Length: 449
Ligand code: BGC
Image (cartoon, rainbow, N blue to C red; front, side, top):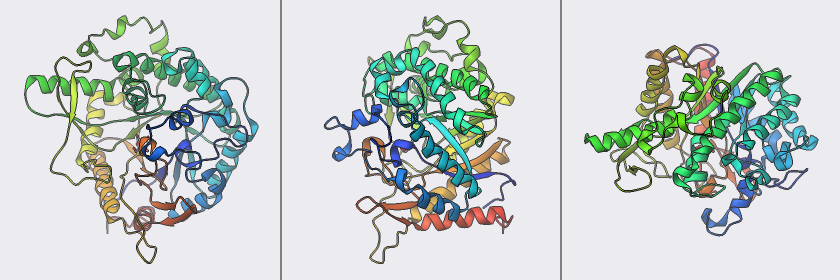
């Protein structure tokens, strides 16, 4: 394993609804995910995040495990409906207390907290008022950001506004596979602008609260055409625009990409008001990159969206059926640098990991060599991008412990730590020991040996 520079952040990432549970405690009210999970048939086996990994109660044990792991950074998300139930009005002190205690415990363990303000748990009343289809939600998000930072910015200097706004738009509002379950196809597009505006307004609110470093996390994927045909190449370019550029060009370059493949003229969209792009493109201090796999697409005629996804044969598959292609991470990092040049802020890998079937052996141990190989390959892929000149400052794996994996319920296991969801017993897997060893070797400057 190559030696990474001193100060490179090694960490793990999680999200509130996926681990906390305690959905009706201490004043928290419903988010769109609470509501969505109650609908029959939308989540595998009807599972919900009601209890999840019970992190809301077991956080001291979880922070102790993180300290044992030796990480220097922990990316968690702040639950909007915990901190500001209903999404309007004043803060919920009990909700803020939870993140306050967590922050202090992390700092005491030498771990830098990196909160994400929105990891998909929109307060339900805001969805009822239009959700991200409504411009007003952007302003509400900035108000909430100010409440969270008002309590925590004295101890936390790096904040992430949104997690994967593309997935919110695509899965939540275009295809209906995630909360709030709307299938509007291209009608979901306003959620892009309103999330980006929310990012811009929240950035200003965070800075006004004394926050020094603000980041945005997107889910990136190199897009591969299924063939060399002009149709498939155009389909790949169209998908690339939606996933890799729609949520990045406005922030880094200050303009929307060409949306003519969808019959749209972004500049002509009347939902973009004077001043919006200036607000959205205030320089970022870091770009969060989440990477799982490349995407292969072919053209699809006479359909609302001009492309379809194709399988990528010839690679190992995770338990989720996702192909393992570490080189795709190098490719996308180099592509980001080539696309944005000097304007690309320092990059942090804010998520990367895989789902592995992980039933304990008779002696209770869990050997997830598949995950070790996955992480090893992807960390080397980050090193390759750095050797090619991309400024990467940290790697945070997804995820600390098994959790509620959205539509898949508890069936996909992405954790370094196994959770028995009956007893909430935590058992570190072999990947935990491997990652601990890697971090220690990096810290001691012994990695290259
Ligand atoms: C999300 C996580 C999710 C992971 C694995 C990312 O899209 O940010 O919340 O668990 O992928 O599916």
